Amino acid sequence: MNINHKDFELSFEIFPPRDLNASFKLWRTIEELAKLTPKFISVTYGAGGSTRELSQTALSIIAKEYKLEVAGHLTCMGSSKKEVMKIAEKYAGLGAKRIVALRGDLPTKNNESNINKDVFSSSIELISALKSTGNFQISVAAYPNIHPEAKSEQSDLDMLRAKFDAGADNAITQFFFEAEDFLRFRDKCRSVGINQKIIPGILPIENWAKTKKFTKRCGLVAPEWMNKSYENCRNKEEQTLLSKAICTEICDELIQEGINSLHFYTLNDPYMTREVCKALGRKFNSSYLSYVA
Image 1 (tube, rainbow, N blue to C red):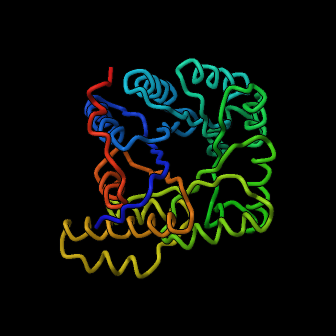
Image 2 (cartoon, rainbow, N blue to C red; image 1 turned 120 degrees about the vertical axis):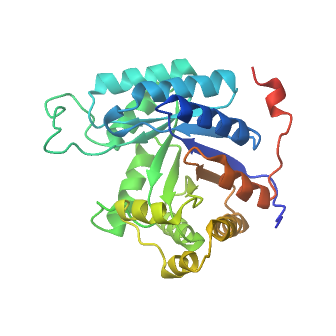
């Protein structure tokens, strides 16, 4: 399959490695993804900043050694305003001119250490503070199938509009299972006056069983046709071919509908992302590694 689309922007999300083996896997992944000439690579930030130092190290290496533009994730729950803005300053010093600004997980009853701190009350306050520095391009989260905590579809759209009003430059969506989910969401945003760039978040399915578990935690429901399709696969090879076909079809439909940017949640594995991009006609920069420092 080779659809041969014109060039489209790509970006990738990775998470920081926690041990040596994971580090080797991540850098092999980055080397493969770099050949696809991404616009940027974003690095996640664990709940409560649990991977803060690891995230900063990964950002630094990707920016300095691989010469790629990077985006640091930044959450505002669990840390004071001063602490959060210091991390933003550190990101800028490491070469990250982009930030994915997120609220983060709310503190539980067993973890309310930040209750008396001078904290950002929401992602909107964080976005406003980051915007005031003039140092960053700011991405925020959007939800084609409605945030699980939202009171209604309208309140979810109102929250997204408030993020843009606070200074966000673009939004990256949670993953979804069908292109129509994103396209309906895009049209609803336009209908209420949200015209800023919204980038679809793409999750290539490496393992259907794990994806279903993750889906439940995100408050999503997988379509029954997809569940049956994977159940009918006789082996891992057939599942892989099915995943590639589904993901490629979703991306193709989005591009046909005028979407010119795709953000892949890679899970630190380049294979499926690489194969889908190849099927879409993405050109590989085979000489990339020859000039990596």
